[in-house]
Image 1 (cartoon, rainbow, N blue to C red):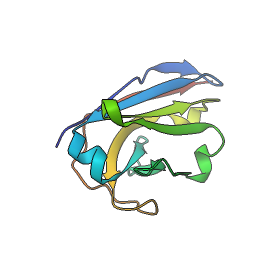
Image 2 (image 1 turned 180 degrees about the horizontal axis):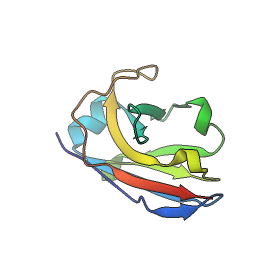
Image 3 (image 1 turned 135 degrees about the vertical axis):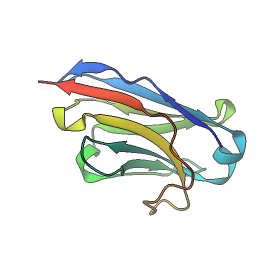
Image 4 (image 1 turned 90 degrees about the vertical axis):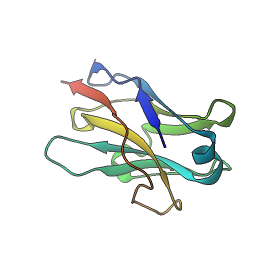
Length: 119
């Protein structure tokens, strides 16, 4: 199992970024996919999820600002992040989930991608 995240960088508050995550077809075909983040000194937290048929949900801190999407032909999910805030600073990871309500990842973490938001 290999998941590879990309797209993170340093931006100013109010800016936008789009993260990408690619993985094996087996993962994308059989699981809900999600974006997680880990801020310094904190545990991983899920921020957005997308089902195999495109249903989505978001945690309150990112609701209305982040959009998760998927391109099954490319085995890729995306996280469009708008109106970024300093509290969004974290390493972002993707992973599979069992259900749209799940919070626990199914597989080991990839290397993640760093997002840093400055004032």
